[in-house]
Image (tube, rainbow, N blue to C red; front, side, top):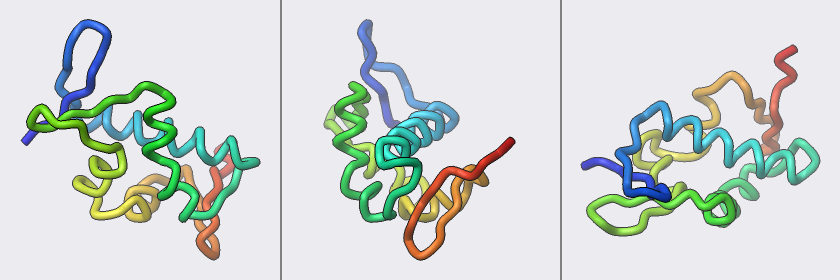
Length: 101
């Protein structure tokens, strides 16, 4: 089953690259709004609220789906998603963006 993202014109199929980019964008916004670090729980609790604020609307089988649901479907958990990318560090359940420069 495929996920779709609502755009101004229509619904477009959400491929894995775009899903990853959207997820990283929202997680980065949450972390930056909390002084460049935050608890993992804060990300879990706010990811859907931030997605709505950014007007990211996902659909599957013509039903609205949360970004949290999309990430869990593809990665089993948000924690696994964060661990898959080398741009985040996690220490004692605190997540922050690594300095890549």
